[in-house]
Image (cartoon, rainbow, N blue to C red; front, top):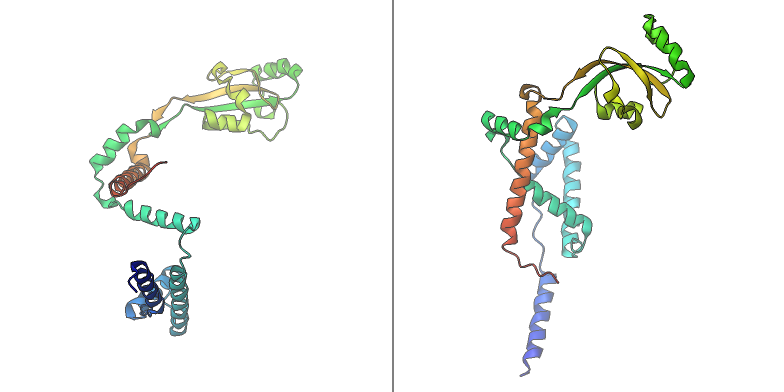
Length: 254
């Protein structure tokens, strides 16, 4: 009885047993809980639940709460990657709370100017094209175009559009391929130029309009600019919160 290790083991066993036998905290189902359940149902379904529906919803809530508490008691939340990820995600959402109404017009304008490259439209092309698969057709088609032929009736039928309007180089490439877009610098506004090659074959192409690169006016994209600014502030808020928490933990890299 004078052995301290024996007493330590006995006391530890008693405490463990007491913890296991301790009655769990009561699950309180009061008016606040019922209102919360009813409001969630109304948000999802667009109407208040009936008395019978609410009774069923409360029953399901109690069932979920019992399972949730038992899962915690059994330690099922520990070493679980999915639960860990969800908890990290939820804490991140809380740390990213930003008052959207606090953003002033001056801050929006400043952000827009600082990030102007992100809101600048690239060079855009409006063009017309006549497609043909045989290079020997080039001279004949060129002559017909010079004779004011109806160009929309010339060339071969294909799934390729005869016109593109106000498209960026990337958008042109998505339709005609990179080989075609690599030759856009050969085009002359208002003139038929060719043959322009592509993976599909050959083209006579007329540049109808070239729109120079220019920033999109703030008035047209203000909602997007505000969303970008808020996103940046949320990320900054999360990073600041992480640095603050990190000071409270010791990290041992081994």
